Image 1 (cartoon, rainbow, N blue to C red):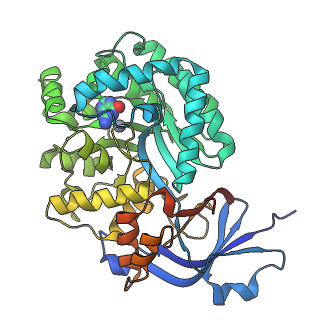
Image 2 (image 1 turned 45 degrees about the horizontal axis):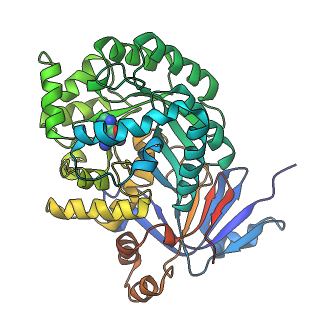
Length: 438
Ligand code: GUN
Ligand code: ZN
């Protein structure tokens, strides 16, 4: 029996192109009264309500949001769920922050019950923030991935995750071995990859925390499992870059270390990429390797200001997606993260348009994860992931948005003033998974 459809009606924004390739106003399409028909977890129809209403099957349930704004579900392409409980551990740069706060917090995830509890909290926060797809780092413990996937499966969210491979430069209790890391990852892939909306990402933490043999094994594992992703960290902090140079004197640069071990290519997504040379950027572009831009994390750890314009250069674009990177990142709100991306761009003297920031957190992040045929836009055939934004979430936000001249200004204001309060409702996999209490 065909499943009854649900139609979401209201003003909407979608993308008709890449706002870095064309002008932001051309790429963003505003429909003042749109209809998104959701059926069996997919977007079955999208267009103006006037055009679609007459042809809707009689049993369609219509949800009308005349004062909302329908946008694609947000995509967070780099976040650590096990760092939820240490967000805001301030005052140290990356390497000290890892040692003092991060590693101790991650040690607790050997306990699967603890992992399940934090996973439930994390996934609930994603729903509350309108994030319907995320690429997630678990910890070195395979049970931390089992716990996350087990709790994620019924949520309707699309979750890509992997266990950290780390066999050196980490404390006792947080190291695996080459063989153990390989076997545990392979077993997790068999158990979870491609099950419903779940997918696996092979996750060498960063090249300082894996031996040559483990990086070699990570590359072999990735090649042995086509369709899996590969995620890591790259060129985040100057002291880290110096350390990598000392560990790999024979490599040309940081990107070259990844290259030597077969860890570049389409489906690889590396966070940060702040201190890159032009050679490194060219090599990322040439191989189709994506970067996750994590503005709140980079500000919090004082890592640097990501050069987005250099990354997306039209003659050799690197796929870039936006990410929260909690717990170095300071929020799970992609809306607030879009605002932070605009702040970083301002500091670099190359302003980011709101349409571009929205694209980075939806269609751009989907492309970075090679999921552009599944999520990131409101388009027939894509997964039924829709966020209903609320321009009247608070008296102040309502007063400010009442004065906007167009949808670009509205988006900019919501990214500046908004966060989870502006998420009226989250639809994932065709189901309502979060309604803000009124
Ligand atoms: N580099 C290696 N591990 C991490 C991590 O957990 N967070 C960040 N921001 N950078 C890293
Ligand atoms: Zn990270």
